[in-house]
Image (cartoon, one colour):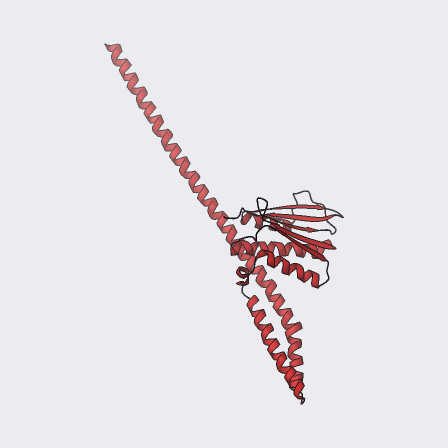
Length: 254
C-alpha cells in the first residue's frame, strides 16, 4: 500500500510538472507572438515613415526645380516681353500701341501659366506617359539629342504620391544622361501589357563601369525611392555602349 501511495504521488508530481511546462510553453509562445507583432508593427511604421519622407523630399526637390524654372522664365521671357510692351505702349503710332496691348495679354497668359506650375496639382492632371513625352520633347526642342518614346498597353494608373516619386526618378535619369552620358539617342518605353509594369530608360552614351554594388549616392537614392513605392530599379551600363535603367513597378490594381 505504501508503494501505491508513492506511485500515486510521483504520477501527480509528474502531471503537475507537465502542466507547468505546458503553461510555460503557452506563455512563452504568446509573449513571442506578441513581440513579433510589435516588431512587425514597428517595421510597418518605419516603412510608412520612409515613404512619407521620400514623398516630402521629392515634393521639395520638384518645387525647387519649378521655382528655378519660373525665375528663368520671368527673367528671360516675361522680362523681355515687358520691355517690348513698354516700348510699344510709349509709341505715338497706333499700330505699336495695339501691338503693346497684345503683348500685355501675352504676358498675363505667361504669368498665369507659370503660377499654375508653382503648386503640384498638375501632377494629378497629367499621366506619367504624357509627362515623359513632354520631357523628351524639351530635349528634342533644345536639339540636345534624338529621343524616342514607346508605350505598350494601357496608361499606368498611379496614386499621386507614387506618380510624383516616379516623375522625380525619371527626371534624375534624364538629368544624369544629359550631364554625363553625351548620348545621341535617349529612349524611354512604358510597358504595362506584359505582366508587371515596367519603365525602361536607355541611352547610347558613354556608359560607365557598374558591378551592381555601386556606393554612389545618386544611384542609391534612386533605388531607395523605388523601394519606398514598392518597386525595384535595375541598372546596366557598359563603357562605350550606354546605360539602361529598368524601373519595375508594383502590379496595378484591377
